[in-house]
Amino acid sequence: MTATDISTVALARAAARAKQEGLDVEWRHADLLAAPPPAAAYDLVSAQFMQLPATERVSLYGHLAAAVA
Image 1 (tube, helix red, strand yellow):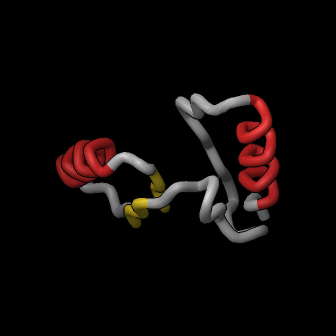
Image 2 (image 1 turned 90 degrees about the vertical axis):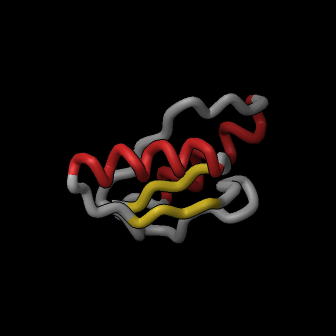
Image 3 (image 1 turned 45 degrees about the vertical axis):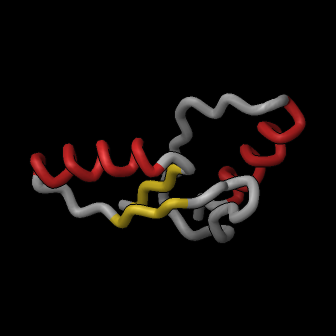
């Protein structure tokens, strides 16, 4: 599993919880608008709390959809 967030605080909290649960996660600190995931790289992509203007949101969702194999 790969988890990506622009917030280092969110990543730290999630990593602490994942460690408690014994989960194996690759953590990425990134701005998905500037560095979207590669095409066809994942079996599933899930996005939460994407509070972006409509134009940026539509573009990002297109990149996220393309990242699904």
